[in-house]
Amino acid sequence: MIARLLVGHPIRLQEYAGGLYRQAANCDKPCDLGLVKTVEGLRYTSMSDLEFAVKVTHVPEAIPLRTEIRFARDLELKDLKESNLIMAGSQEADPWIAAISGQMSFVVHDDPASVLRVENRQPQSGEKSEYVYDPHDPQHRGLAAIAFLPNLSGSGNLLVVQGFSLAGTQAAAEFVTNRRDIDDLFRAFAGNQAKLPHFEILLSTMEVNGMASHPVLLAWHVQK
Image (cartoon, rainbow, N blue to C red):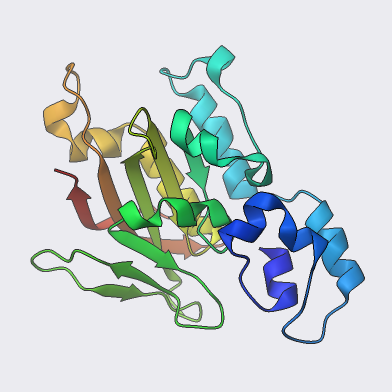
């Protein structure tokens, strides 16, 4: 994400997966190519993503010996086909999201050069076709999206958590790890052996002193 802001253009999945973006860095605006290459060679992650990873490892269903934390740059396409993955971040920060965005109803568009918004590709009754995020909102309202989808081969599952801010990602991560919210939403599946359906959730958040308040459900879709 930092390198993308420095060079002024998004990094496509084809370039990201093969590491080509690091071999031939180019800028759409004046930039220091040496700094760009340095940034591309380092590893960064946000505090909210780190907190999410820790929470996931602490849920009762987690199996420590089968849990591995990976940097996005180290993933391969086969991981999205053969593994159960939990991904934190939008397509701008993690180009791997492009490989599964075609399955999504709620698509996060966070290119700073355009309108920040969540596209609702399948609006249902009472829903908007898009939800706009205003980073200058004096009330610090935000948006976050959660997607529980099949992996690319259908042999496993993917959980994707996205937010427009650290607080937004934090709110979405809390929603899927505190059990209460998910159990309330899917009450018919809580406490029994019924298989949880694939779903997507759109949340409204509020940021207070850099922390997210409890999110409000805006919309949710269950895959048939």
